[in-house]
Length: 239
Image (tube, rainbow, N blue to C red; front, side):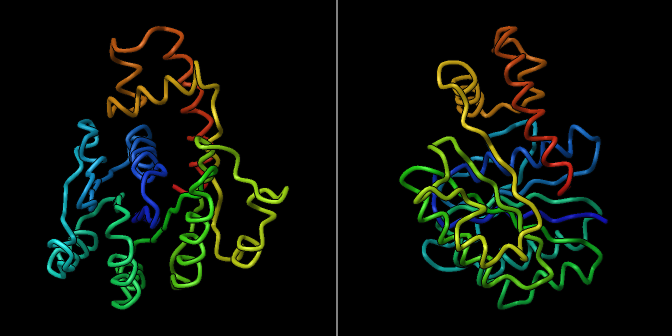
C-alpha cells in the first residue's frame, strides 16, 4: 500500500524539513516511488534538496488560507500512483491541520487506497515544551485513520523534564495508543558527527549526495554513513 507522509509541528526550526528529507531519502534508497511536496510559505527548505525534486505548493495567500491549493494537493495525492512526503511549515501548521480534520481528508486518502502517516518532531532544549504541545495537539485531534510517528530530535539537547524521558512523560502516556512508532535522532559529538550533519544540512545534500560527491572527506563520509544507518534502521518500520 502506498503511503502519504505529512510532517507537522507548530514550532519552527526543530528539524521538520530534515525529517521530511530523511523519509524521502529512504524511499529513494530502496528504489521506491516518491513525490515530495513543500508547503512551507516562508522557508521552502525541502525544495532546496535538488536531488529530491520537491514541488512547492503555497497553501497561504498572505495570511489567508488558499483553499484551492489545499484541494489541488489532495487531488494529486489521491490520483498519482506513488508515495508522498509533504513537508509543512510552522506558519501553515494550524491551517493544514484544520483542513485535514474539517474535510476528513485523512479518511478520504485512506478510502482511495493509501495509508496516512503523520510525523511530528519533539526536541530538547528551549523548544521542548512547545514541541510537546504540538504533539499533544496532533494526537488529540487526528482521526484514528492517521498513524502518528514521533521523532525525538536531540540536536538541541536531551528530551527530559523532571528526570523523565519522553516515553515516561504524562503527555506521551496519555496518547501512546495513538503513536505508531518513535524515531530517535541522537545527539552527536559537536566537533565531528554534529558538524558533519550541520554542513550536510546547510548544503541541502542527501546522504547519497555526500557519498557520491567531493564536498566531504573520507572520514566525514564514514561518520555520515553511520548516522544514515542509525536513522534508516528505525525508519524501516514506518515506511
